Length: 356
Image (cartoon, rainbow, N blue to C red; front, top):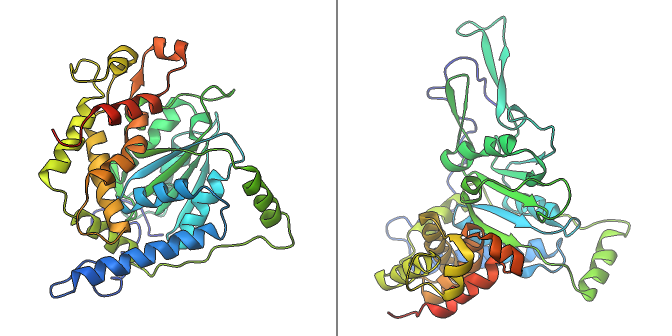
């Protein structure tokens, strides 16, 4: 970790990793189908490595990796004990990225996350030195994020949006790539605080973690109560994930597919005459433009996972629930009638035709 005394101009939190294997960014002359096929196979290897530690939850793992390929943050929601923390830790190990875990509690302060200025009596240029907090890592696990107060939750806003931290009037860059993978318990559980809408919107995906089946429970017992628990090892070489992040942005999305994503987002707006009747009745505010960005980036990442150079309508539909469910602000009437965001997103997908 570098010295943060005084000015941070021309300083970096972490040295950039060396370039990955040739062809990850698609250099001139590289065979494009070969690049895509190699990425597809490597991503499949990652899924298999994670499956060696995490029992079940294939769809959750799929969506988490899709979000990482798209360069976005992830919110995982589920009751305690479903392996959310273990999943994030395993993903960090497989990707080979630096990892920090922050346990959110009611007494956690913003400086406990971002870092603070420390008096440095020997400082030549400045009497203060910045001591970076645990947010300075490639993958940050914000564990039980909704158990901290909104003031502390908001300490992540600048980091998630700008990939920087400001302290003492100076701005410090975060490592690249940078991901926040947060876990939260359902809001009806005791001792939780709803996340502010502005922070929810910064998460590319919200993923619901379901309860395991009987067979998966047996496998969990067998895998975690024996003499040795399975551990994942680093699979990616330095720079490999960074190459995929650039590659995702180069996946083609034709205008008709983008138009479909736009129509999905507009159909979540209660004042849109083309929105489904129950959306107009139960939704107070629909998806922001970030929902559209999540749909398009997620579709591009889905195409890359399958080794395709172009994303299609099915890719948009695949990521729509995770991209939109946390961006719908429901009315009190919806809560009274037990209407959830997933139901309304499903109705939007059914109501909006693929071809206009």
